[in-house]
Length: 437
Ligand code: AVJ
Ligand code: FE
Image (cartoon, rainbow, N blue to C red; front, side, top):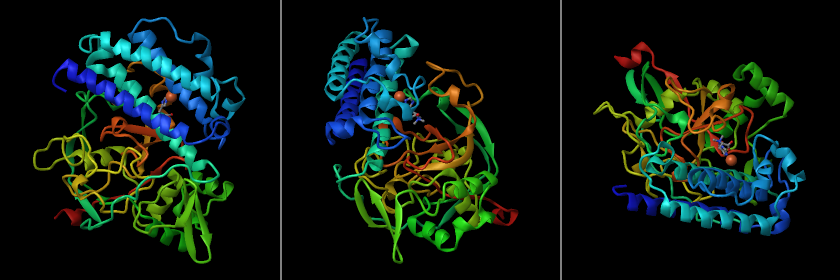
C-alpha cells in the first residue's frame, strides 16, 4: 500500500471480493431457504444480507460520505441489538429481491464515496479504516452465513475442492520461552479497537501443541468415557454437558463403530487427521484436562503465533509479515472443511507451531477484556459492550474466515456453550523447572 490510489483500488477490490462471497452464499439457496430460520441461533440469511447493506449505509454512505440515507426507515430492523436472532424471522424484513436491490444501491453509492474521499488524514478514514471495518463486517457475516448453511437441512448446495493433504509437523509440542513479547498492534491499518494498542506482556515458559487437536485424538477422549466422567469438566461444563446431553461434537453421529460427521449436507466418516470442529469451550477444556494439559491463555496463543526468538520481534503472521497465500493457511472458504494437520508447512510459526491461522477458531481460556490502553473506536457496540466474564476469546480464524478479517492479533469471542461456530482448540501446559535445563 504505497500510494493512496493504490489503496483506493485495494479497498474497491476487497469490497467486491466480500460482495462476491455474500452473493455466492445467498444465491446458492432458493427464496424459501433465504427467509426461513435454520436454527434459533442464527438469523435468516436474508437478514444478514440486508444488515450488511445497512451497516455499510450507516458508516460509509451517511457517516463518511455525508450523504442522504438510502433507506432510513429500516435501520431499526437491522440493528443487531434491537432484535435477538431468534426473533428476526418475525420482523417485516426486506424480501430477497428487495434486499438484493438495497445492498446494490448502497454499494453503488459507496463506490462513489470511495472515489471522492481522501483516505489519509481524518482518523476514521485514515488508511481507509472505515472501509476496512465494513469489508471485515461483511466477511464476518459471510462466515456467520456459512455457519447457517452448515445448520441448514437439505440437499448440498455449496461445493469446494478438498483441502491439501497433511504432512509431518515435527514434535507434538514446543517450548515457548518465558519473558516479554509484544501483544496487540498499534500499526496494523485495519486492526479493530480490541486489538489495540501494542503492549508488552511477560509470560512464563510454556509448552503448546504444534497442531490443533484432531478428530482422531478427540474420538479417543469420547471412547475413554470423557463425556461421562465429571473429573474432566468444570462445574459449569459438567452442568452443561448433562443438561444439553452432549456426547460428541456437533454434527457427529455414530453408526456401528464409526463416527460420521455431516458438513454442508454431506455425511462422511470423520477424517482422523483433521482438526476437530464444532466443539464448545467446555468440551475443549474437558479434553485438555483429560489429556493432562490445559487450554492456552489468549496471551500464550498470540506469543506462540507471533514471537520470533531470533529477533525478539512479534510478526504480523506466524510465518512472517507477508499477507496469507494459499500455501500458508486454510482461509477464505476456499475449502469447506479444516485441512489435515501438517497441510501448511509454510504457515508454521518461528517456533514451529502449525495451523494457528485458518482451519478452526481456537478456544482460549481467557475472558474477553480490553487491553491496557484500550480506547473505543469507532463505536462501543463493536466490542466494548461484550467485555466481561460471559465470553471466551477465540483466535486464529477458520476455513470460513476471510483473510481480510483475520490476523494474528484478531480477537473473536463467544459464549462458552456455543458449537455452531467453526471452533476447535489446541492444548498447552506449564513448563516445569526440569524442562528448562
Ligand atoms: C466478532 C464474530 C463476535 O458476529 O457477533 C458482526 C462480529 N459484529 N456484526 C459477531 C460482528 C457486528 C461479531 N463477532
Ligand atoms: Fe453485524
